[in-house]
Each structure stands twice: as structure tokens, then as C-alpha cells.
Length: 334
Image 1 (cartoon, rainbow, N blue to C red):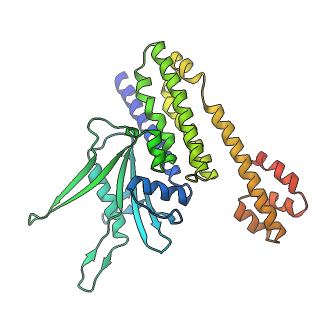
Image 2: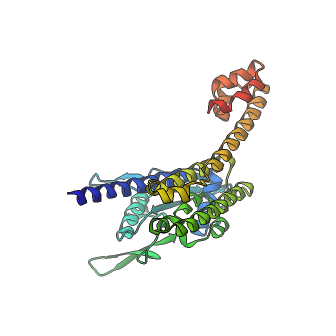
């Protein structure tokens, strides 16, 4: 009975962790259009203009037999000329032998939404491009998953979905392919080694390696913002997810005194908090500056609030000559 309870608890923790990873990934997939277009270019080796627009499509479909089909992320890329392309991205923490079938179900359900029929009654379904990101891999993780469909007459159709093995790529490589927004998941790099470390010496080495890894990630995120891969608002989201991923990855080991001492004593969280505070203040200052210009041009307060995301009472204070007070107190409202 005790072993069963322990197994159940472990299974629940695994599902909770997978759920947090899933939510974190979906949060990162809601960054600015430019960041997502550059990410798609890197993942699928396309070359869409950064001026393309992004649409986040519903990931839930109800099949003919009333089953719910839910994928991770479905994105449309609309080029400046108006041409639209569709992409489906799945993210996995572990292997799944049914992945080809799962993804085919997803892309088929999405393709049905855009089917066409010609004058001869021929129905055409265009499947979205798809790829699976594996955060961690094993020897069994395939480079691509294949689904083979054979008709009663022996005609064969093969559907392939390629894998992107995340930790096989360096931080530099991710930067080069415009995937800086995925860096929070690089916290997984040391997870399994920490779980296996037994000696103080091993934990100390991992602690040093973790700090080095954090420094490299933060520098890459800074470069991503400086080079235009990420907007300031994107950087806030990426850093927030990075902080959450740190807590999640090391959560199972915080109760172990040695790990807590060696890994957590020089936690990078305070540095991330300081960066987030500075970014919020800068973003608020920029919003106030825009709001002041809109007020000077006699825009209604409701419009100013809508386009700057400032609270309506802050905007109204600008109309009454309280610009300085409004700017100083904005950060306190977060």
C-alpha cells in the first residue's frame, strides 16, 4: 500500500510538472508577432518577413464522434502580401510512441477547417507544417516520427513529423536561429545530473555550472532584446518564465539539505527580480511618455488608457496637470 501511494504521488508530481512546462511554453508562444515570426523561421527554416502578422488559432477541435482534440500551439503567419501559412508546434517533456498519430490527428483536424472543393467534387485538405520539440530526450527519441497509412488497394501514404531535440542545441545555436524565447527551458540542462549527484564535491561543481549557465542565458536574453528578437515586453515574459522554470526544476531537491545549500545559496532569482523591476519601470515610463503626447493631442482618456494599458485614473491625472505625480506612482500600481 505504501509503495502504491508513493507511486501515485510520483505520477501526480510528474503530471503537475508536465502541466507547468506546457503552460510555460504556451505563454512564451504569446510574445510579440516579430518574436514568433523569427522563432518560426528558426524552427522550420523559413524566411518570413519580420513584418508578417501572427494569428493564434484555437487548439481545440471537436471530432465527428464528439471527442475533443487539443494540440499545443497552432499559429498562422500572414505575409505582408497577404499569403497565409499555418504551423503546429507540439512540446514534449518525454518520449511518446504515438506521437506521429497524435500530430496527424491535430494537423488533420486543423486542415479540415480550411478544406476546399473543386468543380469535380475533389476535396483538398492542406495540412499545417508541424514539428515536435522534445525538452529532454532519450536514446529512443526519434529524429522524426512516421505514420504509414495503407488503403484497401495497397496505396501507401506516409506522414512524417520532425523532432527538435532542444538540449542537443547550445545557447549560441538557439540564439543564431532566433529561438532566444525558449531559453527558460534550458534550466533542464542540469536537472538529471543534480538528481543523481551524491557528494558535496559533485553538488558544488553543479552549483558552479548552474551559475555559469544562468549568466550565459541572461546575456543571451539581453542580446535578444538589444538585437530586436525580443521586445522589452517580451523580455519581461521570458525572464518571468525563466524564474518559474528555475523554481520548478529544482523544487524536488529543495528539501535535501546538501542541494539546498550548494544550489540555492547563490540563487540567481534576486538578479532576475531586479531586472524585472527595472524593465517594468522603463516600460511604465515609456507608457507615460506616450500617454502625455496623446493627452497633448486631445485624445479621450478612454483611448489613452486602451492604447497605453495605463489605469484610467492615472490617465485622468495627466489631464489635470499631474504628469509628474502620475509617472512617479505608476510603478507602485503593479
